[in-house]
Amino acid sequence: MFVQAYHFLSESGMSNMHGKKHLCFIKWKFLEAKAAAYYYHGLILDKGTEPACHVTAVCCFLAADGLLSESKKACFTFCLTAPVTRSPPLWGAMKHLTQKIPEVAARKSQMYGYLLEEEKALQALPDLPDFQLSLAPDDYILPEIDSAWDRSKWEIQSQPLKEHLEDSEDEAETE
Image 1 (tube, rainbow, N blue to C red):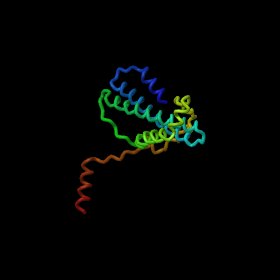
Image 2 (image 1 turned 180 degrees about the vertical axis):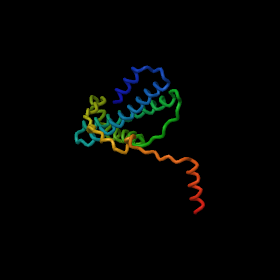
Image 3 (image 1 turned 30 degrees about the horizontal axis):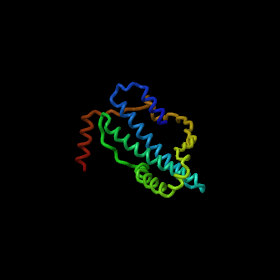
Image 4 (image 1 turned 60 degrees about the vertical axis):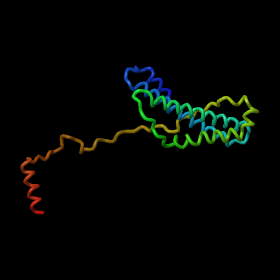
């Protein structure tokens, strides 16, 4: 989806001022999403019992850490692209992951560093699994229009302003 949006914006004319900023935003969020994907893929692989699983998991954690660093640079580029904006505060899942990814990457690379050096062939960045979307939109049929929305049946109660003011004065006097 990020690739489609980036491709579409790249092909459309960048005549407006915000086009380049949109591209920077998409790149920044793409890198964040990819860092999260490698982190969670590494957690799944780390559950394995074979040494190769741990090595691949460490590669995923290190890739997530590198992508997180790149996403911070992309955020900085986004903020400096015209119109210049402040850096947004971290929130949600990325607030948690910006703390967790570097910790886990450092800890796991220390734990399995010896395996990483033994199996240098597996140090290449593993491919992320390609999952089908688990959610698909259901077809939705709009309900019939309620009769209350039919303008031809609306009756507008008109009351001259003078009568309305007299009625409100009478109500105020009785109180």
